[in-house]
Image 1 (cartoon, rainbow, N blue to C red):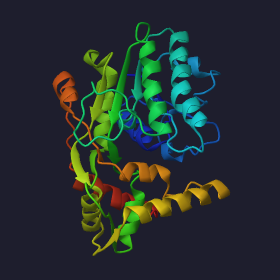
Image 2 (image 1 turned 90 degrees about the horizontal axis):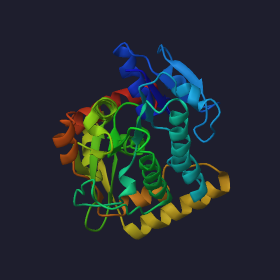
Image 3 (image 1 turned 30 degrees about the horizontal axis):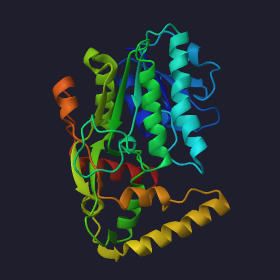
Image 4 (image 1 turned 135 degrees about the horizontal axis):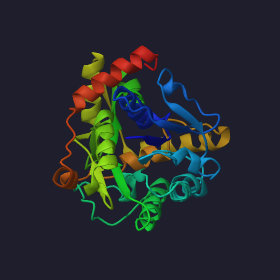
Length: 323
């Protein structure tokens, strides 16, 4: 399989690129001009500097490819317009590029649980979109746009849960907190539940979606285990060999800290690790999903235990000097 990966220098994209290279099928890797492409260093990939929000060069990048794994997107931005310009309209631009290249390549779109919104009851793919933030709204719109092309393009969508593994930045803050001997616990019930999946399992799923006919025209939640953030931190402490002291934080205090961090971010232009998005992630009943459809329709089940994902991530963070 010849694949084009957009956002190939990201966490999932670079992991997928390494997997394809190891299988003897080096991909074409689209990276934003000026972005850091070092996660792809040493790989025999074809680098394509291009912007998914601009059509220039995209159709040429798609030519000869069997699949376009569309991972490019943003998770943080100062306003709604930026999310929609990149995550939603960027998907439209890629769909048009695939059509211009002949319409043969399958679009494998990276969706998100955020499109369905926070749920504790493991919703299925039939659950309606109910996003709570601009990011989730933009990912829901990206799916709508992709499926609007379904009569002309083969389209499928992966909706992974919270992803763990080497290279992950989203959960790095919790590793840093635990390394300092602390474990943060938000007071109040219910404690939110999160579905987790290892990045290698996400790559397995993306390859299944890119190749199996049964995937076309369908969206699939991807997950393996469910845990609270306290349980995540316990596994991190075990992986780091760190004894921790639990710091209980009232929710009102957490909201105040987040509001203050947002003011600093707006004043300095820096995205701090404690931010409104984190609050939206943690101050809800949960972010969970059902994996029945992926198992029954595609025969796919994630296999990597959370503890193993966290151990691999911890080793990688230390090797790279992130911890």
